[in-house]
Image 1 (spheres, helix red, strand yellow):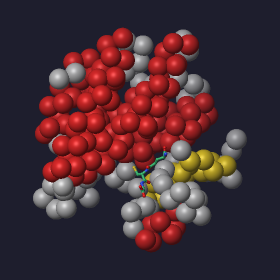
Image 2 (image 1 turned 30 degrees about the horizontal axis):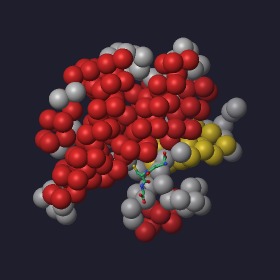
Image 3 (image 1 turned 45 degrees about the vertical axis):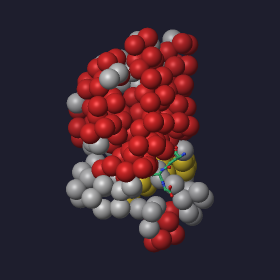
Image 4 (image 1 turned 120 degrees about the vertical axis):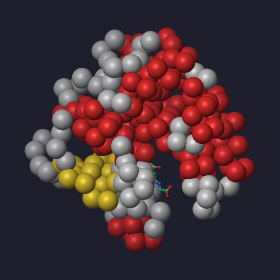
Length: 211
Ligand SMILES: N[C@@H](CCC(=O)N[C@@H](CS)C(=O)NCC(=O)O)C(=O)O
């Protein structure tokens, strides 16, 4: 399918970073429209594109797609010839499982509780949210550690869509010291994180949170 490729997202959003990471890893050139879904103006501009007011949204010509897992699938198939999806059935299933874990159980405690309330602690952060998020994050990290140790996905130097989905959330989580310590108690996950967070596509797309 032809047409311009445009990503609408918010520069600090972890889900937007996942999409930018996959697009960059796939070598796809794209335009970026920055909209903050947490402001009234951003939300008003976003809801015609995404009825739930969430980012990111990918447009390829007249084709519009939202939900990060779907966007990553499309980017991989359209621009990376499926290179970011393992062929083996078990590895592919594990990749989908990681994406499901991240969406259903990871985003809120890692990002919206520990990161949002811990990183911005000097402003409006609530330490009780950090503690609650850290407790909920433990099971998420334990399951991801088990998967990383198994070695089908989340292995160093082997990028797949699970890595694109997870890296941004973990990268924000470890910016809070208690999050960093929690990650480093999981050795296989730490090995994956350290290699993946230093890869070229991650370095080129990591948001500048001071901007
Ligand atoms: N299920 C959506 C979730 C996307 C999402 O929650 N994005 C956040 C930014 S990281 C957002 O837009 N939040 C706005 C809000 O919560 O109102 C996806 O997979 O794309």
